[in-house]
Image (cartoon, rainbow, N blue to C red; front, side, top):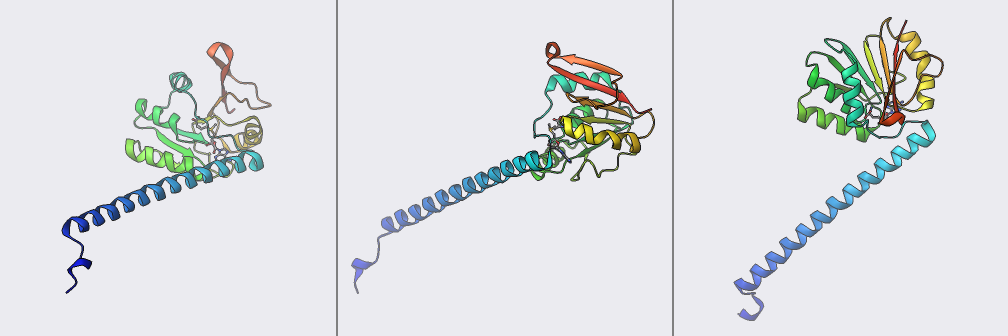
Length: 202
Ligand SMILES: C[S@@+](CC[C@H](N)C(=O)[O-])C[C@H]1O[C@@H](n2cnc3c(N)ncnc32)[C@H](O)[C@@H]1O
């Protein structure tokens, strides 16, 4: 019997250790590659939507804006929409003050939608997140609508608000005005650099 060809227990342990180490490195590498691929997909989808569909980019309203807007509205037992909700930060902040309000976020892009769903589940905030185009979503039951979009999207939304919103519904838009309706109220933040426009559907 050729005992020389049978590895000793020590050699076997080293072999097993090396295989385990290589497997671990391989799994880490695959995970990093998948994350990079996911990030690349997100960036490409964002640029495609911004350039070809005129979407507002995935930027969140700052904490100061959220606090200010929330202090200015009364959402007690109301139905509140966040159109283009991204991570739905506005609705999650609103939930802390209004546990009984019906909160609905609408987001079409997969990545922010997924993030909103995960954060919603983790915080058990009970916010409904719709993966939908804001131009197709039913806003007839909205009492309050919060938007942080862009000039072009607000221009296209104006007729939808006028025809679909009920009388008395409030539209709150951070930074971007409705082009042909005079805001009822405008709040300035950061020494006038940022503005929030308030409208009521007549
Ligand atoms: C500037 S971000 C605002 C995010 C969030 N509302 C906030 O204030 O933090 C605009 C979001 O609107 C989404 N969006 C833009 N156009 C949309 C459309 N037609 N339908 C659904 N979502 C849209 C974008 O994907 C993006 O996440």
